[in-house]
Image (cartoon, rainbow, N blue to C red):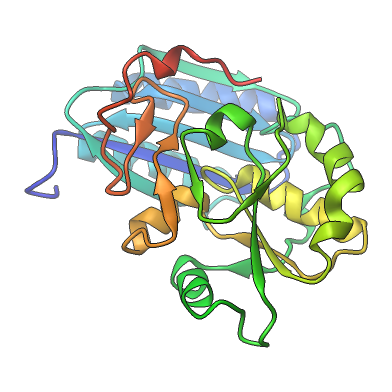
Length: 259
């Protein structure tokens, strides 16, 4: 355990890979999570797994291994933070149609991903003002407007989304404005920006990248430069600051519900 960290390890992980029979997979993961005393949410979908949970370090890591043991998910990666109290009230294991609803079945990251930029590389691009080919970089925020209001990358473009299902229409209306740039789509943990980048490619905007691991991984792997404000998360922590600790302004934010 990190000796300077509070007592509970918070992990968030997702991976796009096909699951032919989500219901029995969900049942098995529920049994394992209950045995470990896990609190949090596990989503099992035909397109992959998405989970976020908290527990003492040994149990949290054991749950991560249980997810990796699902066939096709050995490469699942997790983002970590610590908290003194559990930010989840209970365990929820759900079978859903999509990890995050977009209503575009042709967008399947498990069949091929958009180009990926990792956090240190993105920070270097933003420091120098352009990518490695000399093209100016524009950050594209794919989150809902109320999330953007808590924090965003400096100078980022966002389209005032009420929910992620609005992204395709917004991209059709405004995507041409981003044609001169190397675009990096981003979101909290990576799922929305994965789908968003692929959708942008279908519009002919092929110089669109996705930020690997989203905002959380960027803050974990860099000093947070170019990020302004806090990052909204969908648990009782409300928002996290650049050190991935609950922000002082987090009270009551967790009552907001994701569309």
